[in-house]
Amino acid sequence: MTSSSETQGLDRQALLLAAGLADLAASAAGSAVGAVRQLLRRSDGPELVQSAQQDLMARGRVALARVAPAAPAHLEVLAQHVVARQATSAGDD
Image (cartoon, rainbow, N blue to C red; front, side, top):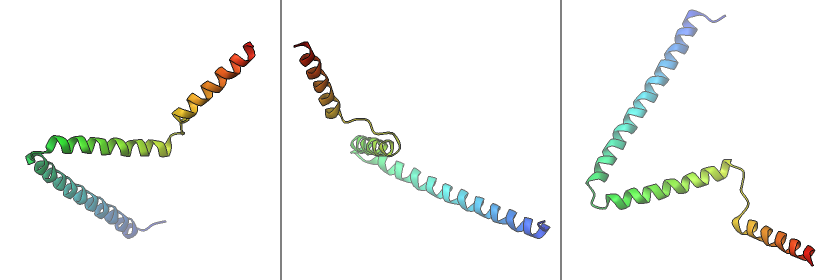
């Protein structure tokens, strides 16, 4: 059985962890807002947004490739179709 002081110690640890995470999140959010403001002031903003979108899409492809079952390669699928057609036409002779 845990004593009251042990419970209070765990509660205090949980509170300190939560406060530390909240402070970290607030700090990161503040930095992000500052970065967005700087980006909006730049003349090449649209190009930066397009580049960021392409980078995020590439990261998304990599992430999906890591977790999703691999689909057969496009050329492999085409080769299988050719082989199937050849087999069908060979049977017609």
